[in-house]
Length: 158
Image (cartoon, rainbow, N blue to C red; front, side, top):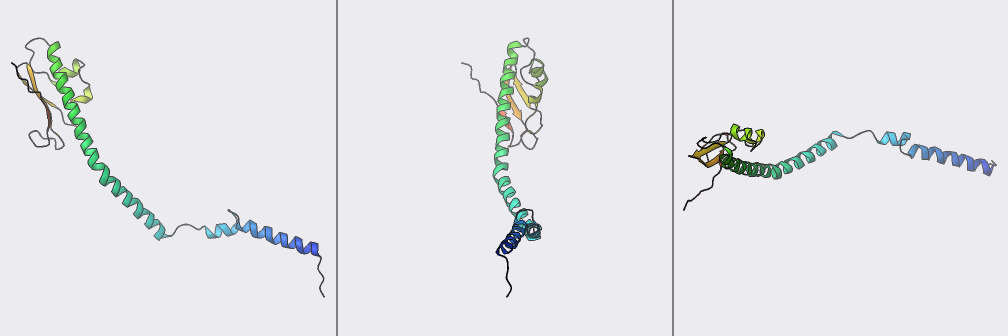
């Protein structure tokens, strides 16, 4: 009969348990063996999900961005109109229609406010000593189309 010492059996059991725990803890050999990376299919699924999210964002954001540009252009055109109307109060009589450069020089608008959101210069139209309208060429950059943004006040003198 093989007689074993109960103390040594416990020690060997504890040693085995410690070795097993070391192998299973994060960073141990068993953990390293199971974490080898992602498969090609997993990567493709992640890329497809990212693509769908980007498409949804683009579908929702781009139309709002375009409307925001148009709204900003309307505000800019009205501001330049008001500056051109104010120019007549400080300009010498018979000075003619103000140009964008005149408005910048008199510090009524800033240099970057002479172009619309698409980089096209604004156009000031006068009739005598009265500013008739200020117009932006709009998205396509050509005057006289449906996308032009214009501001004018119809003044009726009584």
